[in-house]
Image 1 (tube, rainbow, N blue to C red):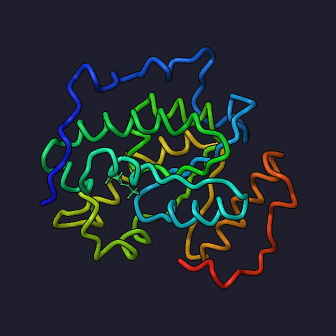
Image 2: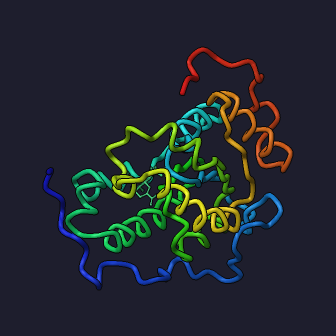
Image 3: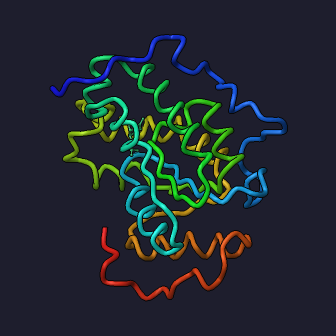
Length: 227
Ligand code: S3P
């Protein structure tokens, strides 16, 4: 197992609501297509593991000429080891503290597409900063579809269990309402290609007046956009 940086002490770790998250008038998502902060020019992707947040996010950022950030990659840079190892050494609450601090920092960066970890919506503080400061897109997938994609996964700590399909169903039952509450847009992933999903996201953003029509490429799939 790779060695990890030490867990933050309680004074370093943010509380359930980080001070910078407590801005006036912060409301959960579902605000009809736009973040409550009218100047927000960041897109965040939320959804269960395996739903395509990183792949869609990377291609979406490329289409918009924006920067792509994956919060799990940033977390791993900070902890100095794979997330799975960190879970084993320090436990899930320590991981969630780091995740909250990283999201709080990243969500303030304009012109970015942010792919979040599947559990980001578990903390209210994360739901509030994401929905206030970015256009949040929920990539909705059925647990059975995710299981098909993730059945051989060895990286995600929560799925290293005897019955991963059951675990995905439990995660879905717990989190689907939280994703919906946080998101401004819901995209059904089903089986379309990444290029089609990116197009669906861009169309929604364009309809809401959040991106320029010229930034929405033709639905004809570019060869480079594979899963
Ligand atoms: C998690 C999902 C992972 C990662 C961590 C916890 C979760 O991210 O943040 O393993 O709680 O569902 P992905 O959704 O990118 O797999």
